[in-house]
Length: 265
Length: 286
Image 1: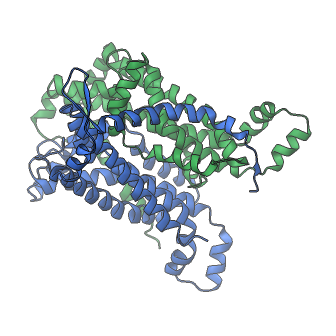
Image 2: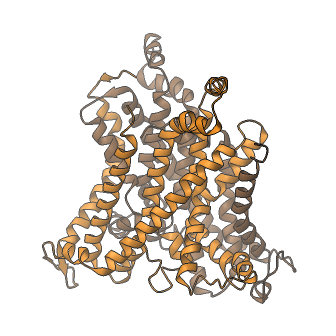
Image 3: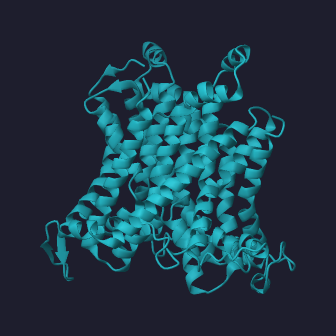
């Protein structure tokens, strides 16, 4: 089939259209946006971006989001590593049940947990901290990280472990110096998915914060409701939320596709 | 892989268990607690038995949200899974275009969900949105904030836009893991491209497609932010899916009892359907 390339091309154009529209709108003035439909900015302005970069309530939103997302990624992968190792190498009482129970947390609707989370994190004094959001997001990211890492680890032959012990490595020395570099790709993929699901989630992040740790997404929804119709500003903020994701994808592009494929259900 | 029995492995999963238990069991107990009690404010609670469960199960409002949710979830599964497979099959296997395709396709997956909703809202507005304007210009009477069919069309299109790439990435990962020798053997046998798909590619993609169906099922059943930002559940209640309805009851009206009972029923439905999917798709796997 010579026309095969048409399918992905059309699909990618379809994906890019709304993004183009957002980008287009972010460079327009409010007057032009409300004045009618224009395919590209007639009066090109950077005003919307300047507002975001000069107003702390805006740019701190990005900083807050990046802090809790990084925190979450580190926590999730750090605790998932030994657990995934245990699942991939050993049999123990209730291993299959625990694995499935972990996955059921991936199915939990955030809406179900919003209110109890608010009460729980208020009770332990973590409300409105980056740590609260980072911990709350581990609910669905730890199961995912364990799942992905377990898949990658099962692909590493057990002889590697045994040879290392014979060579006189202690468990942790083997795990950190030999095993982790071996599954570096898997760790990268797990971190990518943790980053992704924490970065895009809003409901829990919004419920658990008010001022100090308010994520950019919450700043956006509040702006949308309070200051009326500043679509240009909103569009610029939206464009800027795509940037970190785009960077991350670029760095892990060769591993994304493998990420889930190697995981076992 | 052969695994050795080692009960000490429990220590390895201890940190995970502690964190997930803190996040899952404590809140879930709170929900269970609310679901069987009645409150009149002042933090006073009274035992209410199962009346909230009975109330939710027999409420037409819950039935309507559940039906809308099921229609939504099965529609997007019916569109995204075949579409994702078709795109993955048509993708190049080697060369620089692979990276370009993967990066561009993965982009929607990393956009915060409220931005996805806002983006589609702007895109579909009949007066200043590219899609809404174009549809009206070529003769459709399109207005997603007023007409139910248009709201649903936009909602489904948004989800297809947002998540088909996940299916593509997974299916593609399954496809590239097929050794070339399989295709060579098929060519020698003179197999048609349908036969190659049916007997080589599809079986090899089965595992990743199971993951794709499960993930898409769970996530679409839990969907909240995108439709909330896009349509706010409207017009009327026509796009009020389960999560939107639940948040309205729990955080809007603060009806803790019914909200908690609904949460538990909701969660059980997801668990049950996920299990059914999983067993059905794995049944033929020996």
